[in-house]
Length: 165
Image (cartoon, rainbow, N blue to C red; front, side):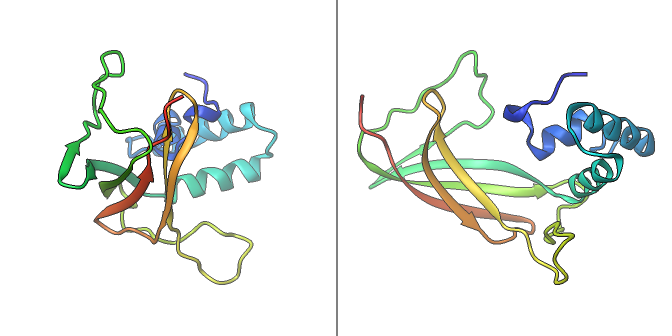
């Protein structure tokens, strides 16, 4: 089993890592997941079960299409490209672009919008935060909060391309 670290601890990756992403032997996978959580954290068994329960309730956000636009120009960004042979997108430094990403909620909980807040008496809905960053420098370029998504939605974000260094 691959070790989970801070860089690759997204919800879909954790669901897949623990084998709780809709596979047949869910109870066995849950026990294995709790054991793994206990091995890599300082949580007790009750807390590990609570983390797993929250993890199983979340939908998975799947990006379907991504466009980068400036004035009349529209650039389609390939989301499934091989990182070993990247296709770079030419952009103008210090320019403002509009990013449009179409996302779809998938998985058994794709209609789930409740936030996991066990300490709050009132129900809360969960929104999403879209982060856009520069991979090599780790610099955050733009972010946007969005309300809960059911089905699919186009997210729009304005971002300023960093100056050349």
